Length: 165
Image (cartoon, rainbow, N blue to C red):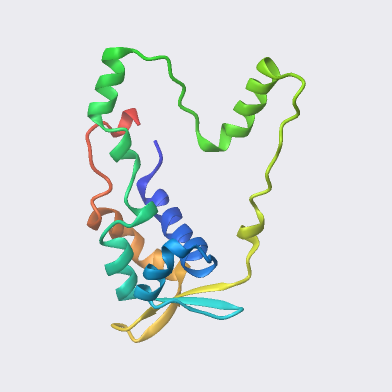
């Protein structure tokens, strides 16, 4: 199963970097205004309180779903009862799976690889502005301080079938 804390960290990174700071996606304009996103060429900052109230508390977008929402005890019991033919693959193995499927079912088609690393090489600094503490911290510092309690506060780690996921 995927550790919910790491999934939440990844989701927060995705929302802040890819949707609030570096995106022109019109579906996020209202949230950008609510979170008071301030962007320069070298940095992007968000208001902590507004981010918590507008994105985290309502479990907006990527924040909302988790492994336990999808693979809960009811789901595993149904899988046990019905015995469907299914394959569960970690996302990091999808390229290998696609290559194997292509090799057996489409041998004349060459696999297409997509380079997703370019966004990870960004030099922009992502900052969380805290009105309560009266200071700015990097997103990484903020996550290090807040992440241990966020999973609990948001109720993401629940369920008794954790070992089966």
